Image 1 (cartoon, rainbow, N blue to C red):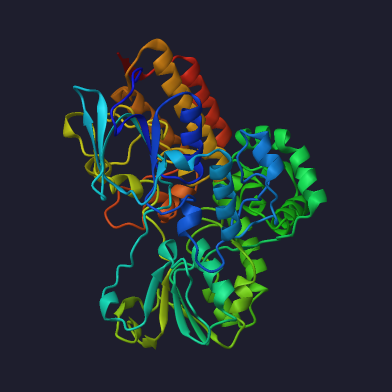
Image 2: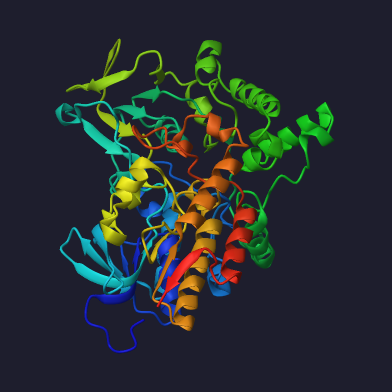
Length: 538
């Protein structure tokens, strides 16, 4: 730790990313007296909620739990307008936090990391950016998010298309004028659904290019008045504790007991209630066996298909919009607001790319195996290289020049999703093999990881250590435990971005640890043991 005035460009810690995790990590370390700099590729704070400004972008966790818990002042002063806020409001919230805590003075915007090398002699990270900056830091903390490296489509020819192409994760901040246009949306996951349901009434023609249909659950949004806000503020302490110990970091859980404790009518009532809650309780609030028992999952999947089918007028079209190749909950479950009703409109056409794949862009649109679709705008909702993509793109090299991208290109391994063997003093918020990677209300898991990392760094300072790194044995044990735990679920049987199957050549492993409460307990035990299984050096 630096006790004298440090040289310019030398820090105790460099935090990468100024989203939910990065802002909190900057705050925690700065409050603890460390000299810390946050690097952010965007020109403003917000992370995901800066970049993902596509039409219809909206939080699908309730606002009263999608927030910071560490400051009562923040809770009391911010007025959420809705149960599920739209992107602009969430971005404003993060700007409010940055301003309230005076965080901008320690954030360097428009700075994208393109290299980080561990120097064993100085026990420092040597960090470079695309803008030519050179920095040194004892600790490098990645807060780049688990869904921040956009996946480009596998079909070629975008350069010849005379229209406009936009990826949802890099959508123009000024928006696009879609009125009266012929628009194609590629992808029908959570993001694609939000775009499609939002723009269908605005465009002249909408072509929806679907490969894998989703089990969309109807969102029940509501506007908040002062009485509702006061209700949730009064419960803030209770909620902050509750979300730390549930399966997915929400204020609801599998509170109905086992599927096998109920008769058929009771099971149906639970499924109906969870579905009609208009929240992700339909996913992680009915019965735990939905994730582990194929027969139970089949019943829930049939129930979900029944509810979706009733929304679509054309029976043949309805069957194309129903998932049949995977079970409910084993793929990301989105909330939707009128998505299925969109397909009852005359200006909307579903293009099933399982029947005829997209081959390329053309000068006038998209060419599938059997048709050329003429379009003015193509919106790509093609997803991300989840969990690992942002980290591997930073060109990180650890001890003895070990390349993180090459290591994860062979096998995706980590220790608690927080550190990687061979990379001393590198911390990975939302790294792979932790709940924050994919299966958690993000504010719950990101804050938990930031707190663990901060406490760890404080422990090093208090005991005179310079470095921490997990032993290979500890990492192997965590990966084995993670795999054993994952393999008890149905998620590993589904090909999805949860398992890295959306990226060609990516090693297959369930990216997210399942069980927020269990994970927190494990992490707390590691800290209480003085970081047993980690190598601490002076």
